[in-house]
Length: 343
Image 1 (cartoon, one colour):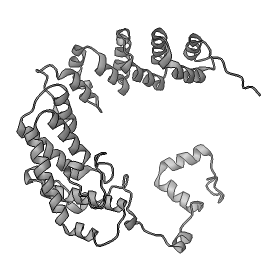
Image 2: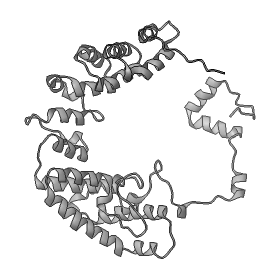
Image 3: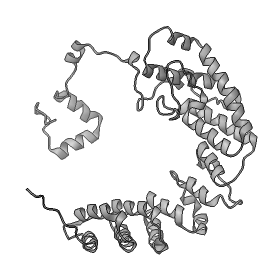
Image 4: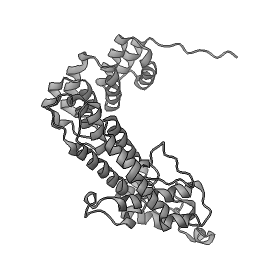
């Protein structure tokens, strides 16, 4: 049996069907337009972005994302109007990247959310009179802006920022996600401060800015001194007394690196509000994956004796504690008395 090949509708017809919200073909036209967009003529791409800007929020967001790369000055007034009326995040991305410098300077306070200020700095920092507000940037973003815009920082400031990043990494990094992707932690390897992603990134920018005195001292002296403390620590010696797999070893090594990196910091980089070492190393629920050595096995009789979700009393408790559950039950027209719940 020969499969019938579907013939493409003219793009002009698809645009017309999408723009006509009563056509009954809006959803299908949207899918097909997005599929073809990259391969169309520029005049058709412009028409598509225009009609998407006149549509709902999801369609406008798609058009904003395309305008970052397919910018044309003819869109400036429309984007300006949308921004001043709606203040949508993705609309600000287009403005920061493509609007005249004067407009950005005149409205600079409006572009401080999320990553807006970072990209704003990249456009404005070429003007030496523009003062970068470090409080609106992460420390690594600040170093990135300095490097990419050809500015310079003094050795003392570079050193201070680097060790502040180390401090913040010890307090805030997740146990699995903060390690630099090029850092390999295998049994026998000792993770040092240089192995953390934000620290590695800071060192990269400082090397690019020719601040080799700072980076050399940090990498060859301070980082190695921390690794030596880890090697001589009772925790590391205890690891070698037992068989351990790569996963557990990585997890423990990250904790050791955080602990001894923090303890090695000069007191001037520590704060009175810093948590204790124990609190610092305590995993956060939303990203914690316990190593095998810490997994708790639940006894079968405990599972059998646990309260089942099908118990109406459980649902009643959920309703009393969370009004959202009660609204959901009403929306679904569920019977609270019936023991045979539909979920």
